[in-house]
Image (cartoon, rainbow, N blue to C red; front, side, top):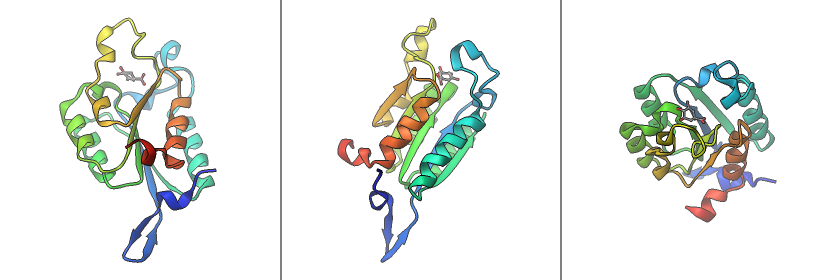
Length: 163
Ligand code: DHK
């Protein structure tokens, strides 16, 4: 069972509710209809529901977002930078220097998720992500289950053992 205390911040004696951000990059709004043979049939709403269940079970606040805009993704990363953790599927922004730099500015532990196995895709360049350099680790190829696994790692305080 995740230890909620490990995810709370003590702000001048007041214990603030921890928040974890799940951030999604371009085209993930089309999950379920977009190339289902690669990305599966679950929708982003399904992913959000599963993430909410995990966070609610341990009293951690979840901020879940998706954007098709690189600059907006940078803003969302900055807003999450001091949170209890970030799960990010940067999607097409995995190859973006501004997104990498924003992630590097975070004190929050970061786990990167790719739904597909980017190392086994026919386009070799998909494996050449920039953003992974800012993450503790990466889950790739386990479908949308990767989001839940990444969240569980952060909720268990796994980041403290590895950062
Ligand atoms: C999703 C995308 O949209 C691609 O740009 C990445 C990633 C792979 C995924 O597997 O979730 O190359």
